Image 1: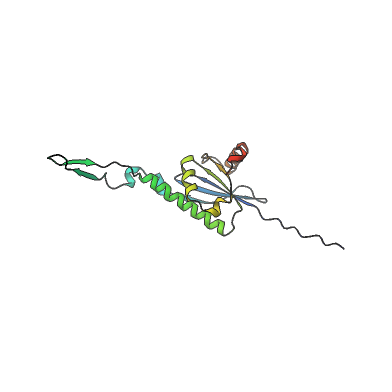
Image 2: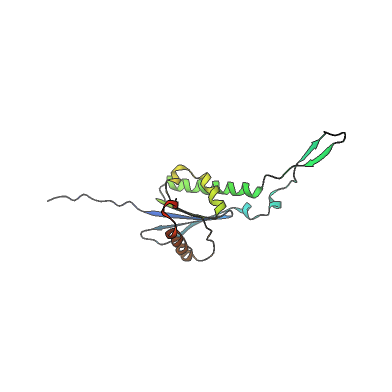
Length: 165
């Protein structure tokens, strides 16, 4: 009697991250389960107005090139919303890295608004980057879970092969 080798199939778990600068929703699918909600991360600072995030006015500079002192207002190149979005991208990336280290998913699909996708890419670890199968450069935040899943799958199918991740 010939023994047949036992074939083990690796469990396939795909996570989806639907994110923008104010929140990130995590979903998962497996061979056995459909699009299932896992958790939602919130960025409270992302919802606030710039004036609510900054307690100071722009700084002051003095120029004494002339006989009288001239006061200048410094340029506001720092925007608190950008900082809050970067911090939130870091939070999301850390959550994804922790989950990857525990083997909670084997494949990852990022579905993010364009600006946030860039911030998230900059924060993602190499471990997570290797698991990304698709990046969808759109925001889906309205609709039922199944409607969003259908839209995402359609967008993934329409993507050219070379731009999938």
